[in-house]
Image 1 (cartoon, rainbow, N blue to C red):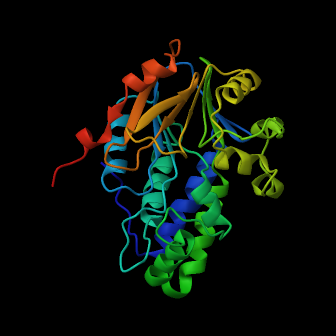
Image 2: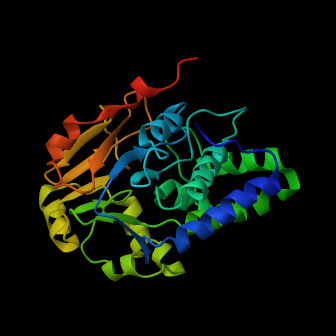
Image 3: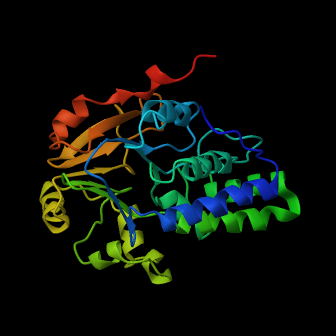
Length: 291
């Protein structure tokens, strides 16, 4: 069940974002910009969510966070969906739900930085084909919160900037929103707090991680060696069937369309191959509540 939040109360919404940011930064699993998952339990890995109706609720049910403290879920690209209200994007509500989940399950719920959140944070125009989504998101905040919209936007920004870049596990799993298009970036940033320059185009490490789309097999193999990883899971690119493996050792997941998918990964066992993981995908459409 999703948490109950008063989405029109500015103080309540800001409180959720501010405390969730504190939880992420203070997590004992966090080192710098990386969350290091324990070698036990399981991870539910998702792709871009983009406020797709019903999918966040299905993801939370599949994560089974109450069943075990060793059940984890990775979430990213939560905002800027296609469902608008009078031309306004109200996906701050999706972000607030995840923030409340972080407060309730601080060692289990792991939102990671994605390019749409970063664009919203920096008020940098971005679109998925339906107009300037940053402006539509701001219009939604203005409509709901009026003269307190900028206060809420600041709390959202603090929450976004507290997000880690990477999730790692001892079995060789490496998860991020995307992979860098280049090999010349500051890998040491993963193990330290990020600074303003890390978020800047074109050389900031956070920028490189959330905007990359180069899935050439040789490039992927080089990154796997550099990261000391066996398998990378990302989003950011379209996967028509919800999940695909464009190169050995790389899996791309989409959770933001009717065929969206997720996967469970056993953190205490050897990783499956990319192809095996693709075949184990769970279609979110089968787990949505019927109305």
